[in-house]
Length: 475
Image (cartoon, rainbow, N blue to C red; front, top):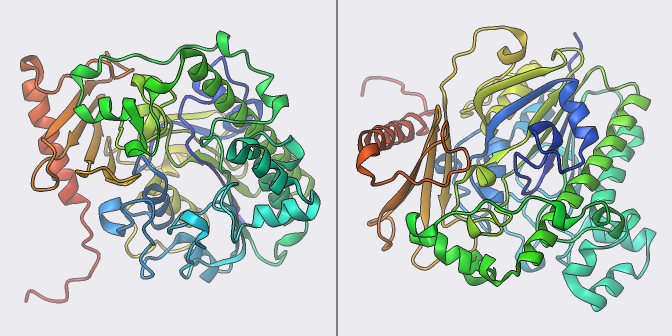
């Protein structure tokens, strides 16, 4: 078998359930649903953090947040970290990227610094808003002169979110990807192309033709929770998102929340159409059979659930559980559905193994191919996510660590000496409480289970320490 091409498509802030194939009858994602039907759908994939940069660093390095060190948005990745695209490039792959990357600080027009990433093609745009180096803005000015300035004058970021489809950031992503497949790749090499959409990230806006497809009043209302039973930080986040840098759920009228949900779904549907165009281009170029296509997202979105918007220290499934679809006609049987707990750090080892490339020396994920090939696979049955004051910083800092093990989830809200906040936590029995409404932390009837989960979390943190440095002798 020839070495496969790799097309890794990631969205930003897409919940696991924002997908028709995941059982959501209210959202239209026919191309993504078909992608899953033609390959494998992993129903329980968790990211390594609830915010962008730490999670994306885990994807690219196959290392947990406490090891790769990119612990928060606004932190640059250590230049010594190895990215899986560098390993692929060294093995003869033609590597490229379009869209967001976020392995470094980018606020205020700062150009994200690059390390030795292996990319020959690098069409970088952190988001549709930030001026400065921005390949999307350059494309927009080239094809639609003056539109960006007009949008900013008319309504700032909100107007950019609502640009017509042919001018939209997501359309630009699709166009650049199709151009790469048709004429931009080195035809003498297999390729790895990373397609990083910015949506369905907030702001909650979308082109009119997509927003018009959804009746906000007909969409389900958010999941409610009694926040008095949960750690106090959630009441804070409900009142003000992003440590006070953005509106909190309490400042949204009910109809505004429903409108945000409708725009969120519309953004996903626009992405679905662009994925459809990309998959069609693969077919036209005769590349579909030998290309691994992955679709996933870096983390989720609260979207009003538990009386919160956006993201942050939350470790609910809507925040850290994401879609994961993989299609490879030459390797993955169509219709494969797997329910094992898998993590974002598992993607790089899986792709390197498929490409016949040696594992990275410090990678911590697993090759998932046994889940579709019938080989031996030891299901560790746990997933780890970490938040270290990782989004807009709180004062005092907020540090949370989540472990899912089987049908149980524990979230430790760390206290002294990590922070001056009081220690607290969450414990959920997902078998009977899939929506995570009943916090069992501190309840007498769940005391033994809480101890078991806290002890296991401690053992998992030790097990996942970086001990890749070889021991040369006994002393």
